Image (cartoon, rainbow, N blue to C red; front, side, top):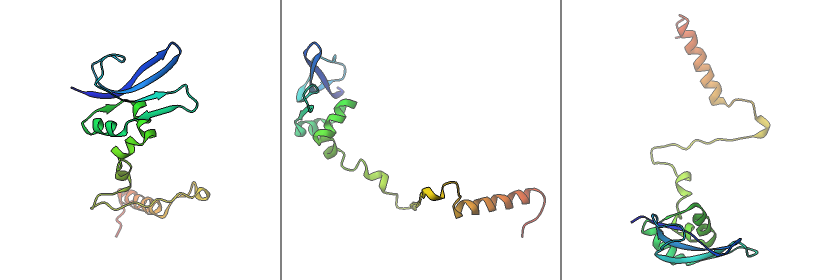
Length: 137
C-alpha cells in the first residue's frame, strides 16, 4: 500500500481549510484516510499551520511520500528538516577521490578568460599546428 501525505479540503464554499492526512494513494482526495496529522488554514492572517511532527516523521520514515504542498508545510513546521537533515550536505561534500574545483567570479573581470582557459587554448593551438603537418618538439 503506497501512503501519501496530502491535503483534504474542508470548510464551506469559497472558505477552504485543509487537513494534512496520511492516506492510501489510490483513495480519492476527500476520501478515506489513515490518520490526520495536522491542519492548514490559509484564510487566516497569517496562515495557520499545525502539524504533529512526531506523527509526520513516523509516516515519512515508513515511506510515505508527501505532495509538493505538504512538503512545503512540513518544512514550515520543521518536520521536513528533521527528516532530511543531510539533504543539503551531499552538495557540499565531495567523494574521497575527487578534488574540489575552486571557482571565483569577479564582476569586474567578466569577459576575460582565466589562466587555465588560456593554457587550454594554447594546447589546442599547438594541436592544430600539429595537424597542419608541422612537428612540435
